[in-house]
Image (cartoon, rainbow, N blue to C red):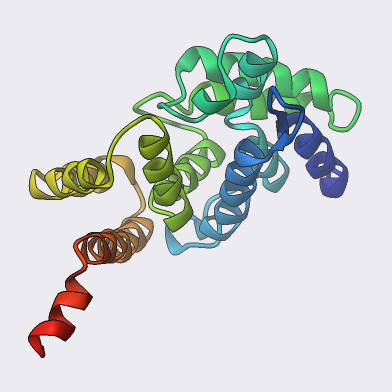
Length: 227
């Protein structure tokens, strides 16, 4: 068994980025920690419970699955506001896998690191074989349906010059044309996780509609109209 506390501490050091102003930027670490916690719970789901999951590999992969972003940021290949702004590429997975091996070489045995590295490299593949990679992929996709993830995307769109009306319109169009329902259908291999993602989507839709309602002062109009 690995010293999980030591691995988590190392991951936190590796994934806490620094803004140009010198402030700590926790977004990548927060995302990785959420995926780590979700993956450990998904590993207990009925679809997985009877399969041999290496808990050490699962923990390492979930913590370092997006570490390629950290490497590219520190190499000045991506700006701080570009981190996690797009789907993680296979090149980033490969970079992250090598980075993870180097960073954990003194904490984790070689065979575990090699297995974890292979899992990270295949996370962008359509067909994933290692069960640990399957679980992390589920947890990673599920994080897209986290309320905070949606709030972060909305804030980024506003900071990039979009109006609130434009952000709401984009969401409404995505819902109208089935973008999110298709994403749920295509992203998840475990039925129970898919159901949870669907439930989260309903909550997100409620939040966006409340933004629309407040932006249009509908509550004020209802008061004036006596509704």
